[in-house]
Length: 151
Ligand SMILES: Nc1ncnc2c1ncn2[C@@H]1O[C@H](COP(=O)(O)OP(=O)(O)O)[C@@H](O)[C@H]1O
Ligand SMILES: [Mg+2]
Image 1 (cartoon, protein in one colour):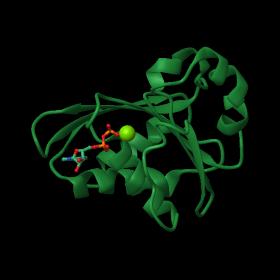
Image 2: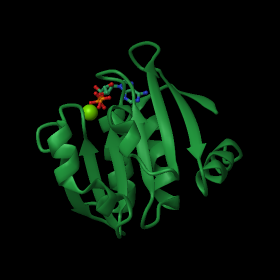
Image 3: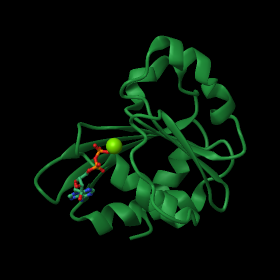
Image 4: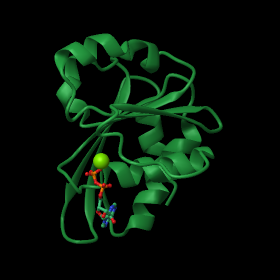
């Protein structure tokens, strides 16, 4: 599915939709150039999960853990090394009690779980972003269908 966000609040609305469906083991793989809106989406998602306070880009920490309705694991793997990827034990996060969002997910494509929601964001202009949403395995295809019919 392709969908165009015309504003930050549009992006927050999409994030809120997916946050409402998130459950332990949910993995959302985000891709898109710098400034596309990966962190913006993650912030909207965190707010909808009930995470208090500020959620910033975890570029230098690789992963940050937050407590919301369920735990929220926010990853940014832009600068990850092979050694770090091995050490982090990503599978334990992916299969854990919380929901994972991975910024720059395609960099660790071969480490991602077989079931995930893939979101590819492209800047169209200053305020518009094209989201290509791909449900890979269950239950994500249904999540996208629900978004299509929720408007
Ligand atoms: N429709 C939109 N959705 C998301 N962000 C938007 C949108 N329009 C403008 N922006 C701006 O684009 C930037 C996205 O930055 P950020 O989320 O940090 O990107 P990334 O994490 O992909 O590098 C922010 O400055 C945000 O205000
Ligand atoms: Mg970011």
